Structure formats: C-alpha cells, structure tokens
Image (cartoon, rainbow, N blue to C red; front, top):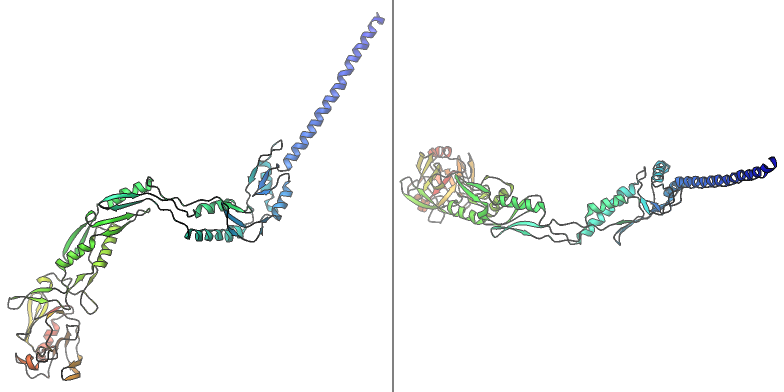
Length: 477
C-alpha cells in the first residue's frame, strides 16, 4: 500500500510548490506598481502639471519653492496692447512676489493637481500680497490717459435721441463709433495686472439703441413735457404760455433733461412789449385841467429785454416751473434802469407825479392822486434854445444843499449854491430854488429863462422837494 501511494504524494508536493512561486511574482508586481503610483502621486502632488502658467509665466514641472523663486525673479514687460496695437511701452520691472506668497502658490498647486499628468493648458491669476504700486497706480493711470488721448481723435458713437420737431416726436437712429470703452478696458487691465505684456481685448463705447428702454422712457417724458404750461406775469397781467404752441424744436438727453433748441417765445415777448411796455412810447396823460394829451416817454419807461427773457423762459420750461415773473427789464434811466414798471394806473404814470406846463409856467405835484403843491415857475430860456425838455422823465435823486455846476449860453462855467436840488433829465435839468431871480413873470422864460432847469420860488421849493421822491414821474409838456 505504501509503495503505491508514494508517487501520488510526490505529485501532490509538486502541485503545492508551483503556486507559491507564482504568488511571489504577483506580490512583487503589486508592490512595484504601488511604488510607481506612490512616486507618481508624490510627483504630481509636489509639482505643477506641464502646461500650467501663473500670470502668464510657465511653471510646468516646478515645485512650489521653484515657482516662488521664478515669480520673484521674473521681470515684467510693461507693454500694453489693444488688439495688436501697442499703446504703452515702459521699462521692465520686477514682480512684487515674496516668500509671503508661498501659501497661495501651494493652494494653486493643490487645486491644479491631477493623479495622472495632464497636458491641459491653464493660466492662473495670482495677486502678490505686496502691492505693486507701479502697476496698480502709475501704469494704470498712464493707460487711462492714453485711452483718453486716443478717444479724442476717434469718432464718438451717436445715441438714438428723442426729439420734438414739426409738432411731433421723432426718434433718431443710433450710430456706432470708434471710441474705446475706457471703463471696460481698465477692468480688463486689472485682471491682467501682474501679467507681462498686457493684451487688452478691444472694447468700444456702445450707443443707446432706438429700441432701448431709456429711449422709450424719454419718449414719454418728452410727450409729457410738451403738455406743460407756464404762467408768465408782466406787471399785473398773467400770460399762460403753452409748450406745444411755442416750442418748435426740443430734445431730451439720456439723463432725462429737456433742451429747447427753437421756439416762438421771442415772438411772444415782442407781442407783449408792443402791447404793454412804455419805453420810447407816447403816454396818454390827463393834465390838471382834465385835458388828455400825448407826451413822449424820455427817461421814464420800461421794456422787456426779449433775448434775455426768452432764454429765461426756455429754462423755466426746461426746469418744470409753473409760474414766473418778468425780470429782464430795461429802460432809458442813467444805468438803463427800467423806470415805472411797478406803476400801472394812469396809463403807466401812476397817481404820484410832477406836472410841468411850459406854456402856463406852472407845476403841480400830486401825491396818491391828490394835489399836494402847485406854484408858478420859470423854465428854460427859449430865445437861446435852452428850453426845458418836454417828455416823461423821472426824479433821478434829491440833494439838499447842492452846488450846481455847468454851462449856459453866455456863461460857460458857472457854479451856484442852492438849498434844494431835484434833477429829472440825464443832462442835468431839474427843480431848484432860485433866490437870485427877480423876474417871475409868466413870459420870463422866453428871453430870461433858466439854462434849462425849472426855477422854483424859494418859499415853495421846500414843499416841492418834500413831496417828490426818487423815481417819481415828471411830465413836461
């Protein structure tokens, strides 16, 4: 029995020995592969993939320490392009990277990690902790100034615009321009702040299109604007000015402000001047006797400055005012003062005034419609053409005492002291006392009159002086 079993045992022994050798090979292979993978994993964990760049700087295959060293030693080409056009070329500068930026480099190393090496290209942006003042301030400002300079010679875009023309709303089409969008380009610059050779993608200012919401909104605003009215007060009269009747052309800007470019407001002012102003016109005047005469306005009178008033009214419409009073008033006063604007009664003369009759050689002073003073006087000498000037004048000022200086026929340089002086013409005619005068006859003015003034008896002159005020009308006829 034992002799028969021996081969079998030998065969079994061989069967058991062969798998053991095979297992060693498998285990060895596994260990080798594990070591390779461990080495590969370590390599991948400590080095950047081949086609990785940071701020445009190649760092493929480098460790974090090597990357920091390269970033620190790298020189930036301070050149800025828009598309292919070089717009700025400054001297090379060193980057602002330091060892303090190592943690951020390690974060990038970790974030780009792949188990197997990857050939995928990727550029990371990394900002150094230390600020590069040249790039962030000086060079950025230079880029902005260069763009501003370039834009001056480039065609600007034209926004669509809402206008009022020929009694209707008109919307113009937009037109593309060539000017750069500086804000967008500077944002692009900031993204490449630490990249050598900055390439900005061309960006242009876009016009506002005719179908944009802002144009639709402006269309409604301009429609509403043309429905406005403005109450315009001139003295005691109010004129209601309608925008859609007077404004011929207007436009609205993108910030909602309306500008009037053509109107008939000037014509309206001319109409008001013709109907209401008194400057250089004849006044209807009722004398002390009740007779109505016509006397030409001289120093007294007012009118509206149509050009200035038109500009004022257009601005009032544009700003949305609902009422406004006339303000650009002028006249023939000493400094082109408008005299009599506040007076509307008695055909613009009012109820307080001085009346001078050359024919009767007499004056009447009225206060609030009542006679306050009347007296005989002697006016300018007619035989030498020095007569007192007819017209509607006004009291320029009052002085007491006063020294009259001037010239007269036969007396080229006189100087006379008076107690009271009330001038009313621009060339020096006025009321004053004349204690030297002996001839007060009603015909004295013909050959023995004054040099143009109204000589008033000394005992009455104070009352005349006291009952007259600056700007009171003086009607000489």
